[in-house]
Image (cartoon, rainbow, N blue to C red; front, side):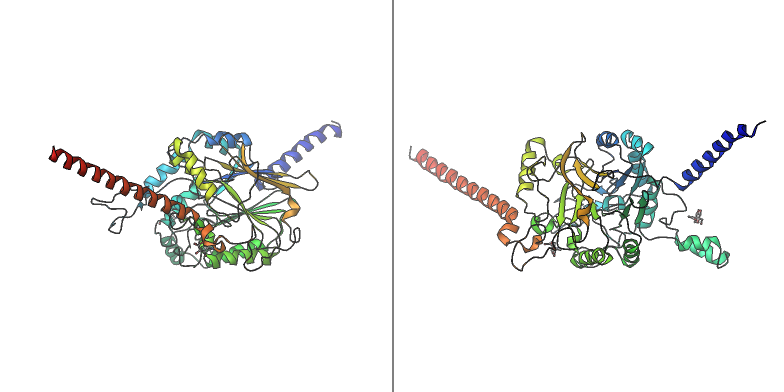
Length: 479
Ligand SMILES: *[C@@H]1O[C@H](CO)[C@@H](O)[C@H](O)[C@H]1NC(C)=O
Ligand SMILES: *[C@@H]1O[C@H](CO)[C@@H](O)[C@H](O)[C@H]1NC(C)=O
């Protein structure tokens, strides 16, 4: 047997060993150039949008919350036993579901045909928002959060020994009583985490994408408190993540919008949740990013049932984008009958915004998109310079709003330092709340005026009818 004979065999064995060790390390080192994301998927809705997402063929898909609708909405009842609206209301509009029901709903979502197909070849990660956390608009006070954390992580196929999983307190007492100080059990407990926040790094060194997913529910103080969204432990973690090794791109996923402060212009009718509702917390986030000197950071968000791209130039040395995709099934236009869709678009057009990125290529002139949509990120690593394209796409996978730029633009000093002179309006810098009140409240003014005109017309009509009928009565008496 010549020595030449067994060389090929050795090569095969070596190759197998290399492949096997790569596989055990996971696919984290493979170059990632396509990422999709989305939010607000009602498990009871048809979910045709997965076909478009599968066609886009993302390497990573990111859930940004309301991945299922786990809570239950009671009907609008002004009268009766359970009154859900009016000053005399005695029942909450939303009620949480028991664990078994949550499990059923997750199962329904997970076995949807399109989503199952996506899961076969795409890495799926995610965080939650209020409806999968368990209750509409809920924060740290919600007592179903520990149970539901486990359910979300099961849905995302999080390994049982993941640091994201919570170990119940009764396991702690078992651990402390029966094991030594350095037992693996105790270490297991120490790895427990309150909340579902997590970070991932994809791609080879130099072309890495870091995805940081925030938990905006588990530790959140009540709305209007101007308290915390993330809580101490998550802030400490985030600080470490942002100050850690550099990456070409850093995506921060937040279930609620970071840049747009919709409530400032849609109040008092609609008040959506957003980082803007917690101004101190928001400033802390911007300062942390600026102080970390990290380039290539942008946000992605969901929650609001429409898609849009916003941009804020006055926080760090470069523009901070927030790409909002909402929802995969639930969207503002779906909530009204088709003949009224034009009204929704008119309202979108009329809602003042200082942060939205306007572009003639948008599907609608408002550049907000109120039909089902998903987010699509493409990075051309081979272009010089490297380019980043981010789009909100419709149910057929066609873009409805988008931005395209060299990655270099997300680098401190790439654009002249943005400042705003006091009292002067500057797009992508002036906060919504600094708009002149006539502009800021024009939706409310329009609506109140419309209602007032309608009421006046009604009164005029009624009094005309009354005087006519009186005259007729008098006339018929005389006859
Ligand atoms: C917690 O303890 C229970 C029994 O008390 C056990 O069944 C369960 O597997 C433990 N959970 C973990 C994550 O260790
Ligand atoms: C966002 O709008 C709310 C409601 O008008 C306001 O209280 C808050 O200060 C605004 N936040 C920012 C950052 O402008």
